[in-house]
Amino acid sequence: MVRSKNQRTSIRVFGSIKVLVACSLFVAMSIVLGKFLSVKIGDNIRISFENLSLLLSGILFGPLIGMLTAVVADVVGCFLYGYAINPIITLGAACVGFFAGAISCTLFKRHLILNVTVSVFVAHIIGSMIVKTIGLYIYYPNQRPMLPWRIPIYLITATVESALIFGLMKSRIFLREFEKFRKKHDKD
View 1 (cartoon, rainbow, N blue to C red):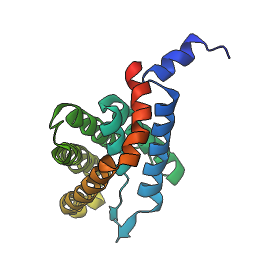
View 2 (tube, helix red, strand yellow):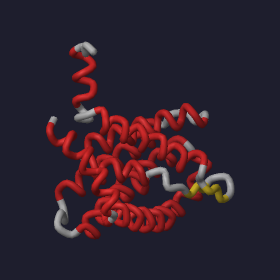
View 3 (cartoon, rainbow, N blue to C red):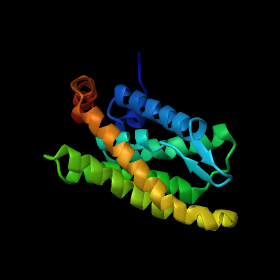
View 4 (cartoon, helix red, strand yellow):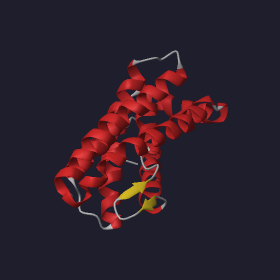
């Protein structure tokens, strides 16, 4: 099979086809968890774990891939569910993936529980509680009275997601499979 130069450079960001496929699965998982398996309370509050796979993408593959995965998940999810794309909320999703990866790559590398917990909480505080809330405040003024509820919702969500990601990272089976991706990703 002959590859053009454009095909090679388009995959280079992800490092390998395996990482690209894993991130595509993370996108699909985010859409399903966020748009189709969310719990709605009233008209304005939605509880979901849509960021779980985005956080995992950032933690496993770094800030750039986490950010790209989050942007694609947000845009594709909006198209599939019929939402208008809100650039500030898309930026918030990008922040979730980016900060999860950036924090995980730099802090508490020897202490997995601290690494995961701080990565997830910082990503949610910046991306979900600050940036996405600003987007909702600007674009949806009728939701303003409900915005303070985002704080306890995301604190609880971040706690559950931290526990789930920590559990995955402690699993020998998961780590063995992830090492197959990492070796390919680190070579390029």
